[in-house]
Image (cartoon, rainbow, N blue to C red; front, side, top):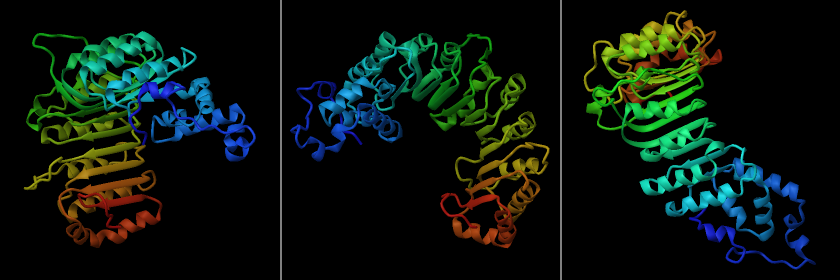
Length: 407
């Protein structure tokens, strides 16, 4: 990983270490020194785009004057920047330098800033973007700077992907207005969002966003307040949505059902947490509204249950999936939650047998037991599950640690 970098140490010929070789032995001591510029530039491009270190380019700049000169002349290397390994206070300056070497002002640009959390520094970052290249920004991954982000989004008409991390308590209409200001947005990810309702008396029409295809909503904050949180989907119509990851289905699943009826999305992938009994019926009914779904991941009880409920989420879900007319295109199924007893595994086996022609992958994490107890309950059914594996279905069944499969 690159060490913290000062802008001046990157751009100044005088302060950047260089390796000086005489002309007579440079080709022998350093064969890369005589590579054609085009080949070196292509090597740099492959390195920058494949390295897990987003700022590997900073290391390349410090090798020699020739490498630095080639890098500055290759505009495609400057299409994205990250604060990884950079001192937060220096990142706005680094960003300004990065944008200065981007060449074509119409080229797409991506920003990744997960380590800068100071509101003033975040404000400076967004100010640099708005001054230099807001129209060309296609992707941004940033901690929330509430005062500036909405203004930035409205000045970035080509923004395609937006990720907001570690959001402080935010009113619902703030997030809806961000979507309203980004009509071309395709991907919207919210992680650790502390979501509040609208201000009392505030009214807003439901927003129809025709471009959004991927939405992920991860809530944070006290679990005791979860039931008070309104659903973001209640204020949206997303007719192009293909992938949805929603942290928690609310107690009242009416807004979820209404969203699916209103949007009729061509949903292909759904990951959802269903924690409350009152949302179960609505969730099961919703499966009939997404016949295009090919991947489903359901998480049951987030906390390990001390006392078993009369009907578990697993029982309700797999009872519904036993009807192969529900989710007929399903190829990947994953369930994290309680499987109370051997009867629960018999129900799982019945669903897998019925869907063996179309289901390619099944992953179950039983949160109700440890590995030894799980193996004892599962043992009598193991041969039938192994038959499915031999037929080509990828089956993984484990205890709550999710590490060892009983197969």
